[in-house]
Length: 88
Image (cartoon, rainbow, N blue to C red; front, side, top):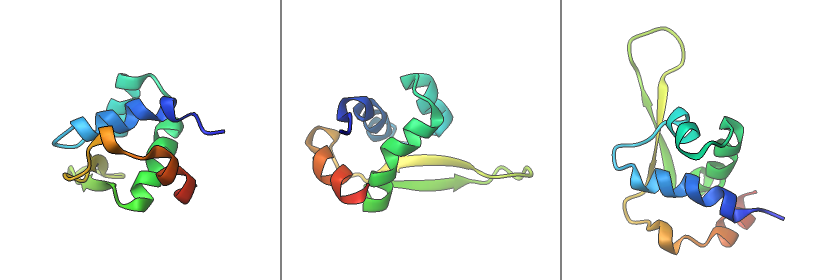
């Protein structure tokens, strides 16, 4: 059984972050492990509700990734059961 209540704060923070939010910021805000945060966002990424924006800093290594919610999607009306069931 999927615990949607556990995922809701992650999706809420992504929706509220108009300029994007990193996974590290989500860890600080929610207290959840990085892997759990990615698990919460994965179905929304696959469905196209959340998208990734790589931020290249000019330094070596992987770019920082910002996560953003599509503008038209309101977190209050997200049908978690449908999204999670379809993309897990």
